[in-house]
Every structure is written in C-alpha cells, then in structure tokens.
Amino acid sequence: MTAIAENLSVVRKRIEEACLRCGRNPSDVRLVGVTKTVPVERIREGVLAGITILGENYIQEARKKIELLSDMKVSWHFIGHLQSNKAAVAAECFDWVETVDRESLARELNRQVQKRGKRLSVLLQVNVGEEESKSGVSPGGLPDLFRAVSQYDGLIVRGLMTLPPYFDDPNAVRPYLRMLRQLLEQLREAASRPEELTELSMGMSNDFEVAIEEGSTLVRIGTALFGSRST
Ligand SMILES: *Cc1c(COP(=O)(O)O)cnc(C)c1O
Image 1: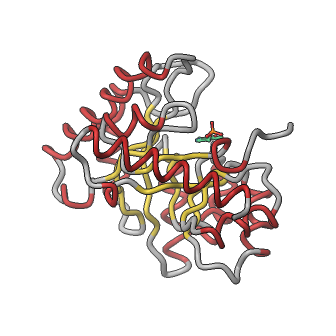
Image 2 (image 1 turned 30 degrees about the vertical axis):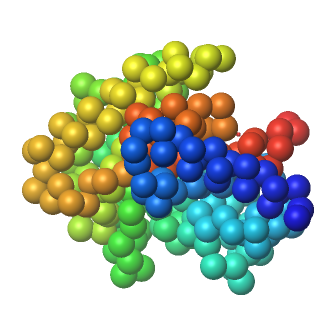
C-alpha cells in the first residue's frame, strides 16, 4: 500500500469507529479529501486509493488540477473563500460550492450555472464563532440568507458548512458544531423542501471524530491523508 492509501484506511477506520460510538451508519458520513497545495500526482494516488470527493480552496490552483485530473471520476467541492468575479470558474469546474456566505455571490453563481444549463449544489457557510478573521454568515443572518439563496433555481441548498474556532482540544469545539446542527434543524422546520437540506460539512483532521458525534455528514480532511502542507 502507498502511504496515502494507508492513511486513508486509518482515517476510514476512525470514521467507522466514531459512527459506531454514536449509533450512526458509516455510509452517512462522506470523506472530502482536502488537496490544497497537494501536487497532482499525490492527488491521483489518493483517488486510486479510493477517495471520491476532493476539496480545493483556491480557484486558480484548482482549475489547473481539475483539468489535469479530468480522467479521474471524482466530485469537486470548492471550500475556500469565493470572490464573485471567480464565480464563472467555480460554476464551470466544481460540483459543489460549500462556501456561499452572501446573496451577491449566490446571485452570480446562479447566473453562471444557468448560462451553462447546469445546477450547482451549495452549502451555506456559517461563522459559528463570529470571528472577524473568518468568512461565513453570522448565525443570526442565516435565515435571511437561506431565503434569498433558495429563490435561485440554479442552486440547490444542501445544508451548512463551518470552519469553527480552533482549539487544541477537539472537545472544546463541540458547542460550535452542535450549534451548526441546530441551525440546520431550524432551517429544515421552515423550509419548503426540507428533504434537500441534509448536509453538515464540519470536522477536519484534528476534530473529525467529535464532528461525527455531532452529526457531520461531510468531513473535510487534508493533513491526516496527505501529510502536513509545506507553505
Ligand atoms: C485546509 C482545510 C481543511 C483541511 O484541514 P486539515 O486540518 O488539513 O485536515 C478543511 N476545511 C477547510 C475549509 C480547509 O481550508
């Protein structure tokens, strides 16, 4: 086995064990391999080992990689901060955008996917810690953003995503993850198509097990699969 394949099997095992601990079905948690700064050949190795969803943060970097890996059957999720003037590339290259955090961006994404006769799955990014340094709608602004984004036929709102405050102790992040789940439940109660609102993208290398216990359906894992990123 290659190093990445070995890492993948360890991560999968940990996902499974976390699911068993809290009575969830492991097939309800999907793994997003986060590949920012990871070279194409290592990504290819990851896909050959069985990763089926890849997450990228930077549009220009991602565009090149997606082209070079166009022979691989994977789904691409955009997980970085998206400027509206890059919405066209995002609409062209990605299957999901996990970081919709304002109506102006949703409007532009919708325009771009409709031009291409496509629909795009999106998540609304929530800044659960209300941190200055992070993108995301504030929890208080989420209902309005949800109503606004829901009117765009080219976008399917599938759930919520967050990048919570960082703690060395993964247990300390639990209240923020729980908040995201509660926010999703509140949206579902008011939504006209609650069956579409099923996804919670939360949990990274240091806290994915806690995130699974709190209801995560998409864990975004970079370091634990591909090693630490050289900057
Ligand atoms: C980099 C990144 C990740 C993965 O982080 P790791 O700690 O390497 O697992 C997940 N989500 C987002 C939004 C990221 O930018």
